[in-house]
Length: 337
Image 1 (cartoon, rainbow, N blue to C red):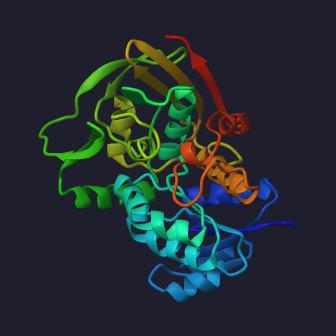
Image 2 (spheres, rainbow, N blue to C red; image 1 turned 120 degrees about the vertical axis):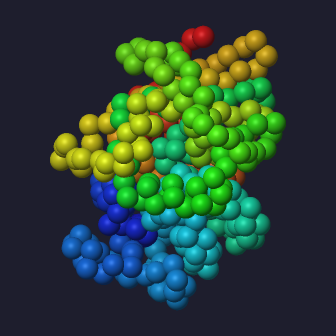
């Protein structure tokens, strides 16, 4: 039986990748959003809905087997769509990279999802899920570690309009403060000046690159949600961070709509004097979010999960097996040292 997956924000940049991936994987996408003209132009079944109208969301999710939320800022969309998924008793997955929105999902919906028997997986995207899956894989048989480091080696970063809007919302919520995960908790702090800069020795062919420390991403929510690691730190290549400030949109260079952007994600976990390292590489951080989200939905609907309720990718799935399933999109290798 062909399964129907609602995609909220289907006509957005990431949403289009998700719709294409669903079709390639044999699912029937059900396009959902507030702009009927843009939905109709995609030429597939659609339903008009808005987060301001719960009844419209209920109608949109009727008969769907799952929903993937691709519409940011997720500070505005996650809660209403999760609530609709709980009412419909269907799994919910999103691609949120916003730290606070992901914290909200764990804080406000863990008990409700458990009671409803509904699976909710936030941050099932490049930022949040991929780092979590890599850290979980690197941990292996360790039950705890002292530190986890996730270094993002992006060749460039031309953000979508959704990324820019989400960043604005996050900065407003933080009231100018910065955020990090240290001492086993999220810490908001006032800091003037630039982020600290250091050199990160990425594996070949990328090699040594300047990165910004305390460039904090959603991994500081997903990783500690299930792993006993009191220090989780993320880094971004300085060149990519400068591109982000320019806010130039990504440009498609192939028939799939992907940009020329490449990425390396270098993960190091430390326990005492022992270190473990796993590296992933691929192309286009927005495009890779589609197979991440769709593979999550496939596994949830197939019953290939490790827990229930609200959980991150590393807690919900067999992390190393999940990454192997993405081999057509992602290269993952352990690195000694």
